[in-house]
Length: 177
View 1 (cartoon, rainbow, N blue to C red):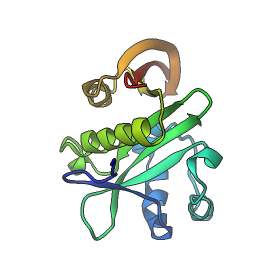
View 2: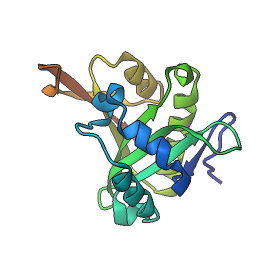
View 3: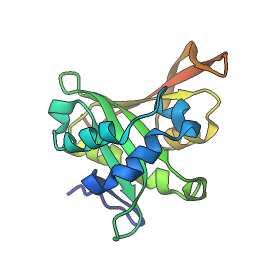
């Protein structure tokens, strides 16, 4: 049986008391580049999002899970399945750890491994993909560690500080299906 609990972390659905955490994440300009965000979110909009988070992945076409370390519930990051396509059995993957001191501690690795297993075994997906800025060495290392392969480059895809940057697309095919 596949579980969303690893050795050091677990993934859980978003809860109403995650309002301040999600609000802080969505409004942290330092991660807007990786989250593809361009404008701030109000608490009102985040509250509405959390109220609608009970939709299953087939309705919402996405699944956002909190990454947690201990049993007292606080989230330290988010991991998403987005653009869920059940007809073609694929989805995109995104992950962000909020604070720098929680990065490079295998939290992202454990979370991604749990999500891959869940996606392939519970959702029966055939493939996952990730869009990663070519300069994001940490994310490229994380995804390639789990077998994601670079399948292309989108030239001048991201405009950041008045300069265009390339974005790579990585893909993981489920060989079990």
